Image 1 (cartoon, rainbow, N blue to C red):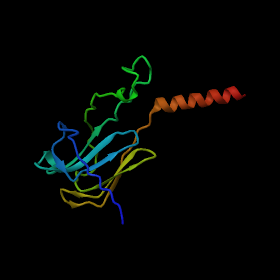
Image 2: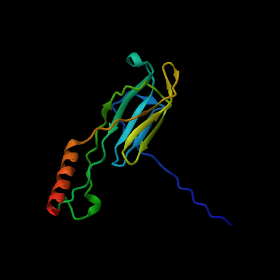
Image 3: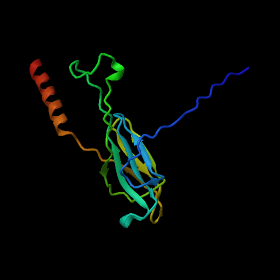
Amino acid sequence: MRFTHRREGSYDVFESRAPWTPRFAMGAVADSTGRVKILGGQLQEEEGVEGLFSRRVWELPPPEAAPTNWWEKKTSDERLNVRTTPPEWILAAVPPWTARAGHAALIDLETDAVFIIGGEGPSGFLADAWKEALTIDMVNVYTTLELFFQEVISTL
């Protein structure tokens, strides 16, 4: 006799007020910080020069962490010390790639860089790949170098 367990899932509306134009066949990724990105997609109605396809990237910031300082906590019950302010979707970018739908979206977990591959655009199927260009946080680089040099000087 074989025992199998089937778990029935249910869904609740997570976001009924999303600011983007209704779409389908878009790419979606989540990075290691919890940030969610919606990339491109096909629209119900034509939107500007791109027609029925979009190249816009919408982003939902990662959730805020619960307070760690004792004076910020509302209760000693850790289950209740969770922020409830919902994050807001923002238009993060309108990248230079061709507007598209039905593309693959991947994320490099080491760098959190997003890749999009192929799909269909206004002129037909696409055979290209794009990687998100990440900016360098110069404050972080400067702080890291400063700490490194302080450590080197202290060993002399």
